[in-house]
Image (cartoon, rainbow, N blue to C red):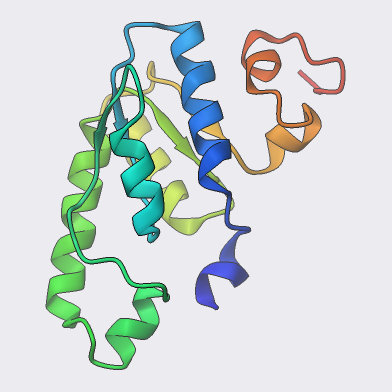
Amino acid sequence: EAKRNEADLVPPEQMWQGAAALQQVDPRLTRLFVSTESAEAIEQAKGLQGWNATFLDVERASGDRYDQVKHGEIRPDDEMLNSLLNLQLALESDAFVCNRYSNWCGLIDSLRLTAGRKADRPLLDNGAPAKFCNGDYSSMLCGLCPKCPW
């Protein structure tokens, strides 16, 4: 429930559409970091053509990781180390697709722009801006969407 209060969960298919749109803009992008609690999304990411998907290889259950830590299913120290490793993997990526309404994505974006020295690397916000463009990431990235304010 904590995740749902923070940001709307985005279906994996929308993340992959965003990743494809990023590669259309810059085909040199090859390393995509996938931050998700969904085992299904990880399996889909492994099969993405043109991308080397990076992710933390941990057991993913169908629940919120915070709840799992709270109920003793995951040790807090392990979850902290997993989070730090996730940040490291994220900052090694070429492209980022995430929802800026998510606090985790906001942290990754802030580090991408500063310590990660990747301000020149694209971050596609698949949260609010995609709603302006009816989910058409190519139009949004190339400035062709008539509904976008930019």
